[in-house]
Image 1 (cartoon, rainbow, N blue to C red):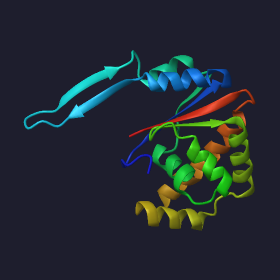
Image 2: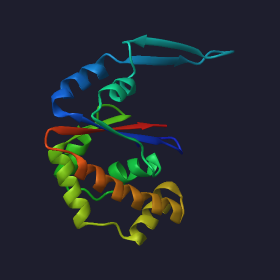
Image 3: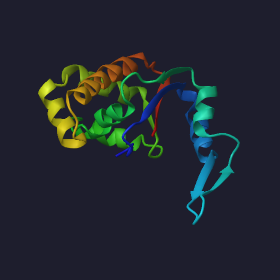
Length: 171
């Protein structure tokens, strides 16, 4: 699961495809926080580069959606756990993982996923079953999953041919 916490925030960024290598370089050189549990207190160490990856994205993205209006956990569940994608799209989606918190999706994949979402809108009963089985949740979580469906349709449709989408999940 990409967000193991009960709550999760998702931020969407759009970048020019020409900045993909710079994005990956920023990831490799990002600032890292390490926490060591001590007997009396925790020790926090910051190492690595000058910026966290989210700081680089905030500065470099062409467009930023901000925090998504639906629960980030519902978006993560709908995108990664809801078992509906064709095998090739699921493999490409998994390959877009930069780490547990960041996913990068190119234009072609976004359009394939968008076409699939349009052709296969979620049934309320399926969402209720999924919510009950995976999150022990009620209809409100199923509604958040449905909202995630429409948010993904919208953002996949906004992507231009020379852009890619980065999703950041933070819990």
